[in-house]
Amino acid sequence: MKILIIGNGGREHAIACKISENKNVEKIYCAPGNGGTALMDICENINIMGIDKLKDFALKEQIDLTIVGPEGELVDGIVDVFKKNGLKIFGPDKKASMLEGSKTFSKEFMDRYGVKTAEYKTFLNADDAFNYINTCSYPVVIKADGLANGKGVSICNNYKEAEETIKKFMIDDIFKGSGKKIIIEEFLEGIEASILSITDGKIIVPFISAKDHKQIYDENKGPNTGGMGAIAPNPYVTYEVLEDFNENILKPTLEGIKKEEFDYRGIIFFGVMITKKGVYLLEYNVRLGDPETQVVLPLMDSDLVELIKASLNKELSSFDLKWKNAYSCCVVAVSEGYPGNYKKGFKINIDKKVNSFIAGATFKEGDLLTNGGRIICTYAIENNLADSIDKAYKEMDKVHFHGMYFRKDIGKQY
Ligand code: AMP
Ligand code: GLY
Image 1: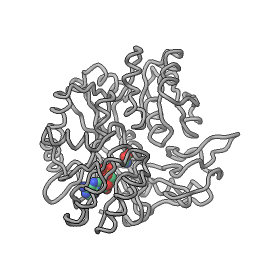
Image 2 (image 1 turned 90 degrees about the vertical axis):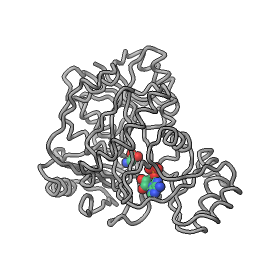
Image 3 (image 1 turned 180 degrees about the horizontal axis):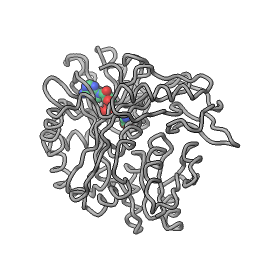
Image 4 (image 1 turned 120 degrees about the vertical axis):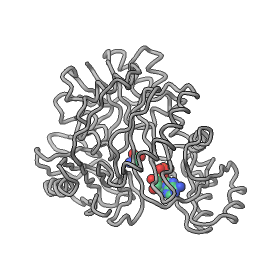
C-alpha cells in the first residue's frame, strides 16, 4: 500500500509511526511532513499544498489511502474532492466537518439531538452581544464561530474582558471572518477529558481516553497552547463517567450523524468537561487531537490501517479493537517565547534512541532544526502512570536545544 498523510505535526509523525507497523505498507508520503517523518526510511516528505494539487498527486502516484491530520483540509472539503475522483480517504465529508468548522452548527446539532452541552446564545451583531454581556453572570465563555487555529475561545471573568473579546472577534475581525459570528456560553467548572473515537457512520467506537495539558506553565497557569503534554488513559474517566458519556453524548451524536445523513467515516473527538452535574460536551473535533494522538496511538494494540479500512468499509462493528493494558505519557518541549513569538533554526541535539515524536522541526543537511512553537515530545509506555511519567521525563533529559522549555508537572497533578 501507498499511503498519503496530510499534516506536519507531532500527531502526523505518530500516525506515520503507527501505520508503518503494517507489513503491507510499502511507502508513506507526508504532505508536508516534518523532521520526524523525514528521518523515517519508509516516509518521503512532499512539499505539496492545496486540495487540488494533493488530489492530482494522489491520482498520479496511485495512493491507496489518504489520512488527513488537521481540520482545515477536512472543513475545506478534501474528502468530497478525493471521493469524487475515486480516491480512498479517511475523514468526514465537508458537511460533517462543520461539527468542528462552525461552533453554531455544532451547538445546533447538539440541541437537535439532545447532546448534553453548556447553555449558549449566538450573536451576529456586536451591539446585541454588548447588550447581552450586561445581563449575564460571570465567567462566560466567548467562542468564534469558525476555525481560529485553537485561539477562538476566550474565558471572560468580567464585563470588561467580555467587551474586549467581542471587540477583537467581531469588530477588529482578528480571525479574518471566523469571529464575525460568535457564541456566548455558560462557563462549566470541572475536569476536561479528550475522548478520541472512530466512526463508520453506523457505530462510534471510543478510543482510550486522554488528558491534555493546555496551559503553558505548571499548575495550569498562563495562556493556552496547542497542548504541552498528555496522559492516557485519563484517570478521571471512570466507568461511571463513560456510562454518562455514552448515554448523554455518544448515543445522541450517533443518532444525529445518521439522521443528518453525513458521510462520516473518520475520527470524531469529543472534548468533554466532567462536572458535578455530569459529563458535558464542550466541542467536537473531526480529527485526531494533538498531543493526545501521541499517547493514544502507542497504546493501540490493533493495526491502525486495518481499523481505518474497517471504518471505510462500514464494518467497524465486527472489528475487535484492542488496547495495551498500560499507561502512557508525553511531554512536549517548546521554543522560548511560545505561545507568543519565538525564534527558529536552533539545532536540536538528540540521542537517536529517544522515544519521541517530532513536531515543529525540520531535517536539513544532517541536522534537526527548530522550526515552530511545539518542537518535540518524548513519550513512554509503562505498566503504571507514575512510571510512564518518570520515563517520559527521563527521555526529555536526552533532548537539548537553545531556549527549550517544557512543563514539569504533566500528569502529576490530579
Ligand atoms: P473548545 O475549542 O470549545 O474546546 O474550547 C477550548 C477550551 O476552552 C476547552 O478545552 C476548555 O478548556 C475551554 N472551554 C470551552 N468551553 C468551555 C465552557 N463552556 N466552560 C469552561 N471552559 C470551556
Ligand atoms: N489537544 C486538543 C486538540 O487537538 O484540539
